Image (tube, rainbow, N blue to C red; front, side, top):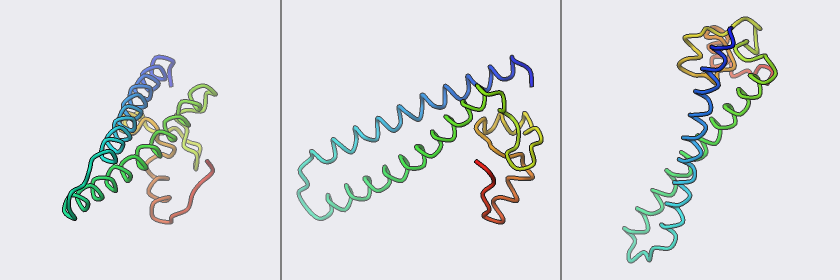
Length: 121
């Protein structure tokens, strides 16, 4: 992979990281506001609880993606970005365009998903 391509993927990762950090911050602000609101009946409480649970699930998923992005950024720094962690072949550029923090090529990703096995990393 050429330096220009590394730079493109790095830019994509930084932009996605910034968006996730904003989303997590906004979700925490919403939870803080929700906690400060006086709930008048069981319907209000059920609605607030439901919103809180949804926000927590989204925040958890986004935190996981954020960790994957940070890991991908570290791989750019050490020069190993774009290499499948299972078969050590190049991850296709089209796959990286869709998921720039991908750890596996498409074939290995399917193996990991079907078997539930976690390769190194």
